[in-house]
Length: 277
Length: 284
Image (tube, rainbow over all chains, first blue to last red; front, side, top):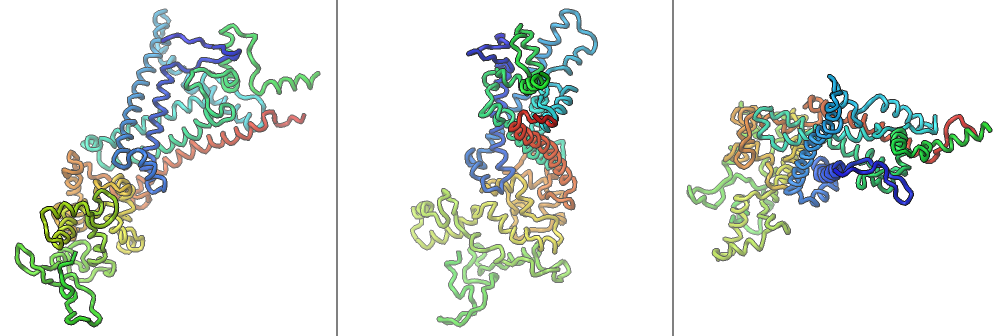
């Protein structure tokens, strides 16, 4: 993998490296298959709705849409297992092995490394949520200083992760129902069907409301955040969402002098200054 | 379909033309058509016997009239004209007799009347003349009537709950390959008039026989007997399917508890963006 610069400067603007090419490809595969799965699944869940037959016909109706659904489901399941393998590979190669080679790997260190990965929820997330509410409810003008990945991104990561386990497993069993009911009673299929479609509705609403608001519709990013394509995030958004990490990266790059004040900070600070003078 | 039967074949009380007001037709009358294999006069009398001993019969085992006897079907409740619609789905253009298929008959069969008769009468019986949705809707005229379901203490609005399964949903998208009511509720090879209660050990839907119905060669041939314990008529109902009810409620709560707070944050975020510097307690 080619090493990408942490900070790229283009036309005088700084861009911060966030996602590797491998991760971006994984995201695009995830995004496309999920959209196809939703479009071929929801007409069946809401078969009585007026739009259902029209949407379903776009994918070949009852004869072909279920096949489209299964193909996409299989690709997504493949991606899930690829991602698990990818996680194990990355954590071992870049976090555990270097320590082991230095002879610094103690008992339970591997577990500690896994639990302190950048997408694992921690106490700071709880404080960040508290601080965000303070900001949103006008108690302060200062946004929480986000780390590399904030609680929003962790939510965006773990919700589909959990969703893929539930929906993927139930989907796989429903697909091969004759095989699985050699052991499981058929009544289980009723529950799997509920889990599959209700969890899918939750996932779809979560992605299309919450995730899309944060990456598409919010005024900071509208019409579309581009980090999922380019892998780089603008300095403005870095300051807004990941200030703590931003300062860290800037210091590491030797750019201490160019660190911008925190979002909501300038007005806040300058006013404070003005008041006291 | 009764084109070769003369008027008085069914209207037995008509002796002269023009006729006086006639009685309603009795479908069980012996008409003048002769059944070719037995050379007996043709009649639907056997159907009456089938129906009388089926779950839809009007008398109970002791020969007494069942409760709410007026709810039980007669011939014409189910056999309305659409059931005898010929192969209207031939190339799915328009309902009615397909000229394209008649053209094939005429190659060999020169007598127009015979072609018409054969097409109408025989082919509709060789092929399914109604798609699963049509059949389900026909049964649903009674079996989805909440008052009738309550009167007869039936466990489900049958077509509604069928509609919640994959089979029913596919039927609503006009799939002709999925099973409808008759495919499961009648033993293979028997007349649909011989439908019996699922409590009867002879019934195709009896717990001991259900596996065979699912595992039919055209459906799920590798299915085990366990497969058939799938709740085909489960409703979102605390009384009928409490476990499924609570399981669904769990997902509704999970969805609400996940989305409502997040949507609240989105709402607050939108409002906050209008007033980026409006911290409380600071009057500038």
